[in-house]
Amino acid sequence: MRKSSLYFIVLAMALFMGSCGGDKKKSSTEDEMKYPQPNMELSAADTTEVIALTNQFLDRLRAEKFDEAVGMIFFLNGDSIESLSNDRARGQKALLIRCKGVRYDIDYFKFSEEKDNIVKYTVTMFEKDADDPRPNKTSFFLKPIRRDGKWFLTMADSMSDTNHMNGTKIEN
Image 1 (cartoon, rainbow, N blue to C red):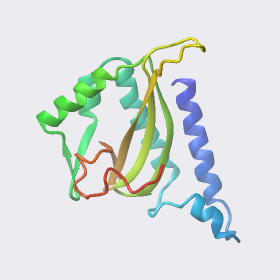
Image 2 (cartoon, rainbow, N blue to C red; image 1 turned 90 degrees about the vertical axis):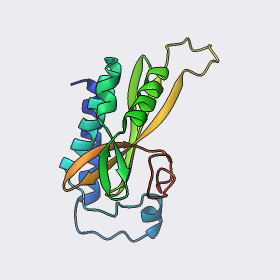
Image 3 (cartoon, rainbow, N blue to C red; image 1 turned 30 degrees about the vertical axis):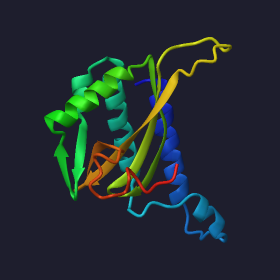
Image 4 (cartoon, rainbow, N blue to C red; image 1 turned 45 degrees about the vertical axis):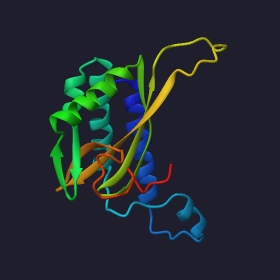
């Protein structure tokens, strides 16, 4: 396992355990508004599973196994999880190939609801010198969804959003 993956797993577990520790009530609602709690019950296993699933997806992108990466993406149709149609799969594959990078990193993840969670990842398109003004990074969002205790990755975009959330209700 790569050091960055291990770092994110340890950080996620520490953050999760820290937010669950003790029976203390916050005296200020300011922190609760700044860092809203998920509207669903989560365990450390959920966090670990989402990170592992995302890392599997990114590993396939790193290895340029775009068909396998697209095969990990599902579609939220109302309340059901479906495989991507051939047209959607071709479109996702074309996008992933166009945005092929030299590095893929998870930036952050946020849990909110069973069908509204976000993982942001950044693709470094090419390495550059410090004085090079060209942008070399782009970011994408995955939308992990939990159904019957199992996590699925979907794309966070308005085209695949039949719940009319414009991708997500989560504020970035």
